[in-house]
Image (cartoon, rainbow, N blue to C red):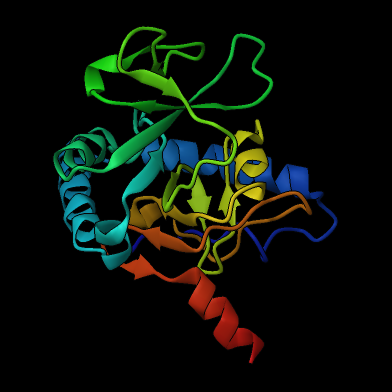
Length: 215
């Protein structure tokens, strides 16, 4: 059974979106940090299996994914499996000025080294290629602290992915544990939705649900 959290509509309406986001962010960081290790391993394995069978992933020839860090959903296995399946793999890098994400194709997991924030990022060595602005990407795997069933996403507060997602037509898939699915994520005008969310328990097709609700 999913451990769903509601810190959205039940909040005091006088609170600002920023305050509601901060409250939800702190709660989800704590919740994910305290996810028991054995349960986390099982959840990662189940999510990985669900993703490997996803038609949209299987059909994709070019994917872009975040490189997981600490207690995030594990994407290291996804990256390695994508190489094995013959897919091109792109990953982000935070430049020293931390202005916005840069994006690179990598040809091997060994091309990743600790970067600006301590997260594994593409090195400047062999096996790394900068991505031209007009490069086609089929699927983008998106990190987040919380998602709701409409595809709204709560990030880490730097807006890196909101800037990135606003400029792409690729299929946007959030990766999260079931405990990160909440009733409502507070959103600001610049916040970007994902089309789909994959957890260890289900695939949430947010874009389809939103289209049905508009009928």
